[in-house]
Length: 209
View 1 (cartoon, rainbow, N blue to C red):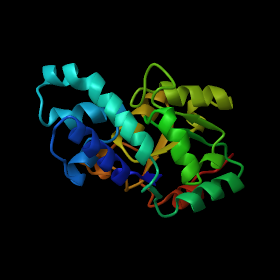
View 2: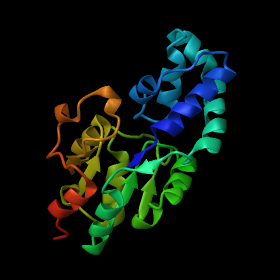
View 3: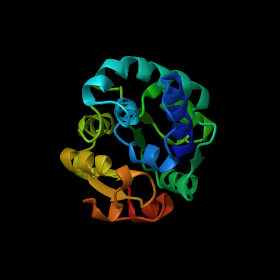
View 4: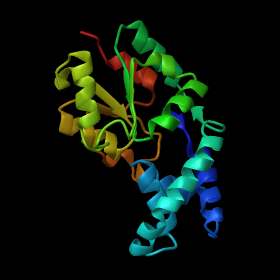
């Protein structure tokens, strides 16, 4: 829903500077996005360190990342075209909506508030809401329970293979949007029930019945 690459790019490079490392390009930073903050930090310092060195430095690096992200989070983030319009259309149809992300809740809620997305969703789950995160289906299965719906009645909309794999594992239908990060891979190669250009297009396809 949100283009957050610039926020994350700035945060990563501030963290790396504190560790005495040079900056990464925006493209490199984007390629590491998608499986939560821990993975992003490991990948970002793994450019310079071996796997064993990454683990030795991980705790310090994560703390630095969180410190800088609290300052930067939402400053440059923007909603993709059609996001607000699509969410409003879904709400107008009476659809119940939940946001499921791998971003920690401490960053997710302020970001959603800053970008005007929070009020569209009854439920928000982050990467630290449960023991596991996407591509594990745990978050989506909990949403199904919260809404009292069978997974087959739920449609997940995502921009990456993590979203599709989580939906498939949960037994939900899944639509993909062509924007987002997806680890540098083409979304057309990801298993889904279809690709929609915007959330407004998705709203036209989804029926509350």
